[in-house]
Every structure is written in C-alpha cells, then in structure tokens.
Amino acid sequence: MKSFLVKTLANAAALAVAVWLLKDITLTGDSTDRTVTLIVVALIFGAVNAVVRPVVKLFALPALVLTLGLFTLVINAVMLLLTSWIADQADLAFHVDGFVAALLGALVVSVVSWALSLVLDRD
Image 1 (cartoon, one colour):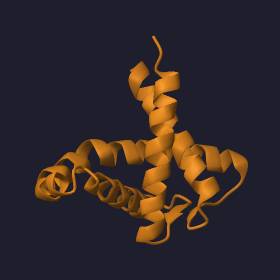
Image 2: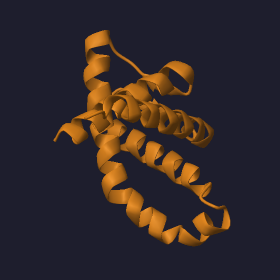
Image 3: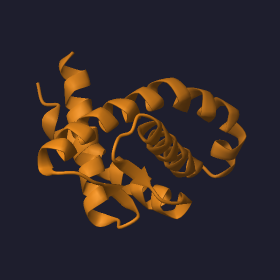
Image 4: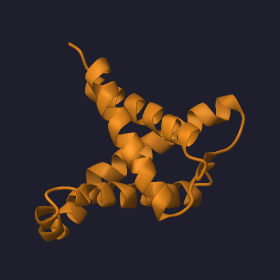
C-alpha cells in the first residue's frame, strides 16, 4: 500500500512538472481543483500503465528490440495521450495537445517520477 501511495504521489508530482514545463500539456482550474485533478489523473495514469502498457509492449517487442528499448519513450507518450483522452471523457481539466507534447511530457514524467521514487521510497 505504501508503495502504491508513493508511486501515485510521484506520478502526480511528475505530471505537475510536465504541466509546468510544457505549454501543450494543460491543467485548468483553481489550486484546490488542480491538486485533486492531478491526483486523479495520476491514478488514471497508473491504471493505464498497469493494464494497457504491458499489452502494448508485448505487441511492440520487435520495435523495442530493434531500437534497443528507445521505443519505450514512444509507448510512454501513447500512454500519456490515452490518459489525456480518459481524463477528457471523465471531464477532468487535463489535456495533452499533440504527439510531440506527449513525447516530451513522457520524457519529463519518466525522469521526474524515477527521481522522486528514488527519494520517496526509502525504507
């Protein structure tokens, strides 16, 4: 349970950094709504990564091998776009505008969540 909470908070913070850095990833609303929206979007992002990502990685295995794993960044971008679409369907104020923004956002989210997981997940 503690690990799930740490990963969710790390994802929420990483998404906040992506929103802050990239103008094509938007989060609207006041500060309280933004915090709740970030946590809900982080939960959606975690669910998408837990359910959809393994299937996509299985089908993309030849591309992953051919690019020595760099295709993972494209898969992460698609997961971020899928998260944005689900957030739009749920009337959440989170939106990723385009594949390039998703690619850059996936890079930011990956690096920030990895760093925060290292810092936060200390026993």
